[in-house]
Image (tube, rainbow, N blue to C red; front, top):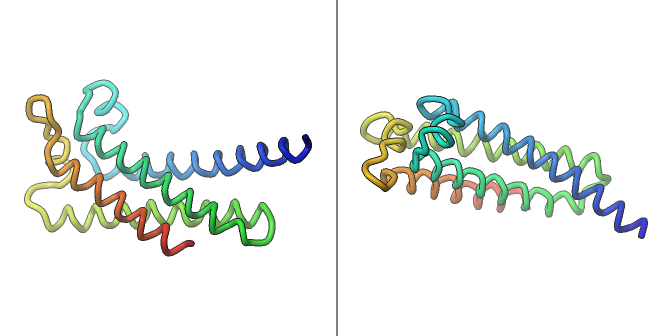
Length: 145
């Protein structure tokens, strides 16, 4: 029974690290999109912003999952938590940089275009950027495993 409680405690600690990384990712996405992301998604119900946030959240989850797997072979829980945090933050940085670079190469300001909801559908660029986040997660995840 003690082993179950220990494992649950470890899962809780890794979950908290994942939450911190997701919060940092939310702030990073908020910085590269127009308006306040919380307001744009929950109050304005912008589908493009929701697609971006959902894609980024899944992507960060993938990076965290691979980071935890990679940390299993490391020495000690503290080092595993620290490496998971650093790998996760590296994933957020790479996702944000890729978003900014692609934004420079596309017509208009990428964040504004992505949030341009026409009718009942998000702009196709929202799906593309969400897919870029997922692709980046696979790259970072492969690098840490």
